Image 1 (cartoon, rainbow, N blue to C red):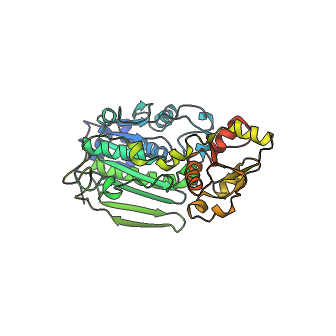
Image 2: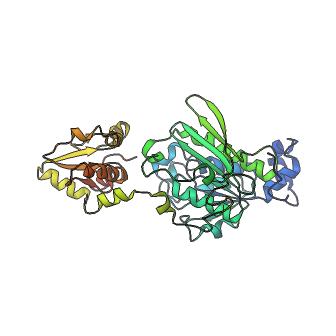
Image 3: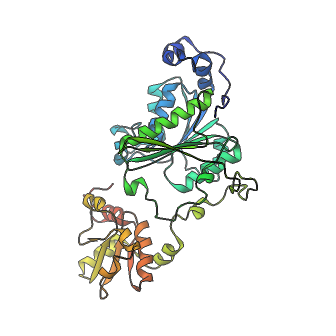
Length: 392
């Protein structure tokens, strides 16, 4: 469905701006009026990572007058494979500052506002209130629900995107005209069910594919052209090079935007999404060891059975000496339990400690009461014991 323009036009374009945006100005559906609307628009990008990088770059190039950036992280070398707004010289820098400098290099006429803080319940309403449109580039469920709920409560539209390996999704959520994110996903998936990009990987260029869709939708909303993805979910498969759409209807029973909402204010999103399940938390309590403790056990020739519950590709990148690879899913399916020795101490580890805690709950419930897991996972091991090894 067509929607009216989200913002009013700016008073004028300068001669330099006319030169810069000339290829937009000769498109009848954009023209001077549409470009003036972009100049007058204020768009907030949540994150300057995989999706935020292309989104910020193309929003800037398009002439969006004010760009806000919410980002608290620093540039890591592993980011550079997909987060193209940052370069080698930015490693170790604030992502927000790096993104701001790149935006200003692309278009000096853009006003950039940095919010170098973690988005949470204490600041999201104030930050969002200063913008016309939100572009969501987050990569975790807790923040996605936070972004959605704040946008709905403030009456703001937002453009959502998601990426994983070779697959991407995008949509526009605007409760005033269609469904919200909770209409599509009323409940967060169980902890550990959906791996993050840090665990499962992502094709770098996929970020550009989905990020460019997000920018296209933002421009359409701001200028009031075309039919935005309100009520539609775009699904992209890079391996098959296919796009397909799924209709998403507004749920009358939605807890947030339905006829009788039960969520009328921000909630505890970490608890709602169960970042780590209660079973895993209970299993890990008193059964978590440090990297130094594991190293001491190995040096003392303790009779332990060290299990790496990551995926084979991760194991190839870096592994702890003596670890046997048994992926997490084999424990969830029950296939791996029979391969565990009854007469040795079981020590589980993953990348950071989340997956191993989930497996620990399964192992303990199967009768391996003395099993433990490695807090911090292989990342902690490399940091403390073998710093010459790579991390990912």
